[in-house]
Picture (spheres, rainbow, N blue to C red):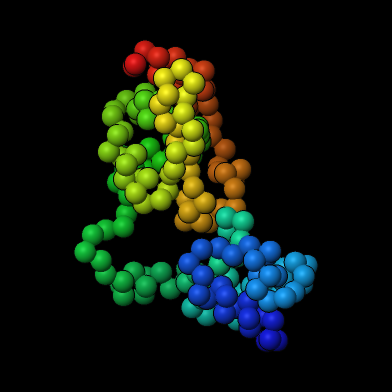
Length: 183
């Protein structure tokens, strides 16, 4: 491994969030093309070695180190927490509605789910998975959307990577009508 690749590996190791090619180039003094080539070579090195505990992946517009999914059981057994990091079914359903229909208000999400989502929206916002994206023109209600952290946790670069969804959810016009009825 050359010095540039080692420097990029060190940056990725200490970073808590994905690092863009531009950031890697600035930190190492490389051009963006050189930094891109080096980080991809680093990725290939990790992939070629097979059973290593770490992988390098491109997610949410940057690059980041992750533990190898091959060792998920070992990691799960090792990591213990006082409270579970898992999301409830209600939170997952709410997150899915927001991901597919964003920007969307709580009232609109509640209309889709058929139950109040106030507490669930607070939980998702606290965990950094959703954030305010403006307000509705008619009522001033907060509109919610997913964050880069959501993309990172889902292993995606953009929302366009969400699986296609058949027309199970109402369109935004129908949701606006529901919001008017609720208010």
